[in-house]
Each structure stands twice: as C-alpha cells, then as structure tokens.
Amino acid sequence: MPDNNDYKEVLTREGIKSTKHRKAILEILEMAETPLTVEEIFLTLKEKHASIWLSTVYRTLEILTSKDLVIKSTIMGDDKARYELNHNEHKHHVVCVGCHKRISFEDCPVNEFEKALKERMDFDVTAHKLEIYGYCKDCKFTK
Amino acid sequence: MPDNNDYKEVLTREGIKSTKHRKAILEILEMAETPLTVEEIFLTLKEKHASIWLSTVYRTLEILTSKDLVIKSTIMGDDKARYELNHNEHKHHVVCVGCHKRISFEDCPVNEFEKALKERMDFDVTAHKLEIYGYCKDCKFTK
DNA sequence: TCTCATTTGCAAATCGTTCGCATTTGCGTT
DNA sequence: AACGCAAATGCGAACGATTTGCAAATGAGA
Ligand SMILES: [Mn+2]
Ligand SMILES: [Mn+2]
Ligand SMILES: [Zn+2]
Ligand SMILES: [Zn+2]
Picture (tube, chains in turn purple, orange, blue, yellow):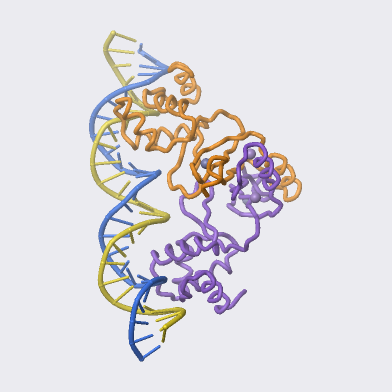
C-alpha cells in the first residue's frame, strides 16, 4: 500500500505530471480487489469528496493505460470497460456467470502454445487474452 | 454453400420465422471469411439492393446469436461487435496487430487446463475466450 | 517567481446499440 | 385460397458509454 509519494515517482518516471486526480485514481485501483468500471471509480472519488469530472477519469485512465500502469479489459456480455492496476504479473481470470465472482490464476496454459505458433506459422506473439467462464462451487447447483 | 431452403429449415428448427432478411444475413455470414461488423453486413445488404433497416440487422443478429446459429465477439481495442456463423467447431484466432489478418487454429491449449480447474477449485467451466495478438510473418519487419 | 506545456473543468458531440410503436408478413388453421 | 394472430420489420427517436473542444487552472522546470 504505497503512499502518495510512491505514485508521484511512478508518474514522473513515465514523463507525465503528478496530479491529485491521478494519484487518487491509482490509490483507488490499488485498494480494489477486482477491476473497476469508470463509473465505480468516479463514484468512489465522489464519496471521498473529490471534485472531479467524469471525462477527467476517462482521460486519466486512458493515459495510465497507455503507460502500462493500468490494464483495461472488458468481460463477455458487458458493455463497459474495467480497469485494474498493472502488477506486471501474467494472470487471467475465471469468471462465474452465476455470481460474477472473478478468481485469478497465474499458471497460464497459453505460454507454451505461443512458442509452437512461432514455429508453425512464423507469428511473433506480443499478447494474448484469455478468460474462462462457468459456475463456481457456490453457484453450480443453481444453474 | 447451402441454398435458401437449407436456411429456412434451420430457422424453422429453432422455432423462429424464416424471413428474407434472416436468410440474406445468414448467406452473407456464410460467404465471409472473417467475422463481420453490423455495418459491414448492412452495407453488403445495401449493395445487393436489399431494403432493410439497421435496427433490423441488429435484431436479426441478436436472435441468431441467442439461437447459437451465430457467434458474437469483440476484438481488443475495437468498439464494435463482430459476428460469424457458428460452425460448432472449437477454434480461436491469432490476430495480427499490423494488418489485422486473422488466422484460426483448432488445437486449443485451454481444454486440458479446464479439467485442472475443476479439480483445483471445483469450478464447472462452460466456455472460454482466447485470442492471441502479435505480428504475422508479413508484418514482423514493419513493427 | 515566471513561463509554458500539460491537465482539468465543463458541456456538447459522437457513435454503436437499443427501444417504442404502427404496419406488415409468415405460417398454422379454417 | 382466404383468415387470424403472433412474430418480424420499418422507421425514428432515445440511450449510454466514451470522446472531444476549448478556455481556465495547475505542475514542473528555468
Ligand atoms: Mn496467459
Ligand atoms: Mn479453446
Ligand atoms: Zn458463482
Ligand atoms: Zn500482419
């Protein structure tokens, strides 16, 4: 749980200004245990009596994403984007379609496969997106 | 390349009416070699001098998707949905971020992994989404 | 402290998608 | 073949997430 100064350093390193909004948004993402929507972040800021505009939240998340400090994603059948802090770990999620719980895992089965793609079709992989859907142990009986 | 009657049969089997719009859209998806956006489908219909409204294309694709005749998807960093015929094969795509070429593959590395999830966290998998990004052999030198 | 590019406030626009409602059409029944 | 009705479509307006334009405020180096 870094304090404000840590974020200031991070932002400066990326060549962008350290502002109160940017630090506040990074803090909120740090606290979150699941990826948040723009609106969720916006409302959390409001709860903390911050005076901020929705478009500023959008612009902030956009630049933080471009600097790879934040990861943007969208889950199946959901129109709004979600954002989470980039901890630079390679992980994916299992999503319960019953209760919308998200459980992450780090032993990605795709890594190995990518090497084969390089061989097979001379394709240089730079990223991949994987998400698994189904019913968690609490929801399996209600499906 | 089925003729109109084949689609009529399919639509009837799903309990929905066989209309000229629905058959035309299924035909367009049949011809396509990549998933199409709603607008692309709409414009193709217009080229064929069809008199149809955009909202009808949306509604048609929605019902065809709900009947599992069509698959809806969105690719990273793209706001519009894309649709393709469901051939009931388990496949994924490698997408070139240079030229947007899509190459499908069927030897999915996730299938095995899903069994492990069942053991590890008692999670019943119903689906998964996997997409791999990078540079194809024609684009690797221009990146 | 001064300067200037960057960031934000604020409001309006954009754009893919959905909705409402009147009219038309497909299809099972007479 | 004509009939009746639920389903599908025409048409336009609304919606909701996101983007954009521009003037005012602010952070960071000189
Ligand atoms: Mn992975
Ligand atoms: Mn798969
Ligand atoms: Zn669950
Ligand atoms: Zn390419």
